[in-house]
Length: 234
Image (cartoon, rainbow, N blue to C red; front, side, top):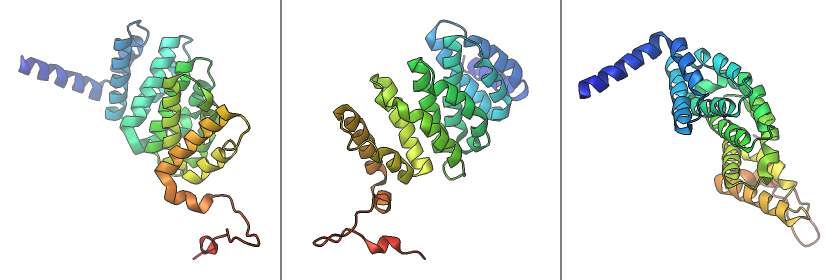
């Protein structure tokens, strides 16, 4: 029995290595089925094919499948992208600009699950490309993620906060603080609560790096607020 299972795994691995497009065509058809467990397993399998045979064998077909006007298929594509960027890590730097327009569309979609899954993609993508000079694209995606901070669904909030955590690592806490300062003292309490939650998250992750980026308060007659040491340039 063990030999049979190992033989099946070996045959599947051989098929993936030598015929990725045939395997991928079958997997993409699986995204159309109604059973959720089947679709989730399919998205993981698509990501494994991408990791094994390089993402350029999978991404064109995957992005083309997103054009199908069916909710399950589009969510499956986004879930596949989430696993894909989680698996390929730093290889994602070569593909981030290709998938940015797709993520823009998903982050503006009316469907909550679209935005939730797209936020998960942004999280894994940003953690993978940290330090590879993709900050312009990530900052662009941040502008699409940010309006979702006011959502009330716990799953969406968790995904959006995860995306913001990943972006904090990738584009730096300074930029996140600049986005955050605008709402910390907003007249509406619900707005303040959300912004303080984000600020606390940034503070926990990068409190030492934030010091140099706080707004400058000028000295008065009694107090010295400016720290001139922060202006030193070597």
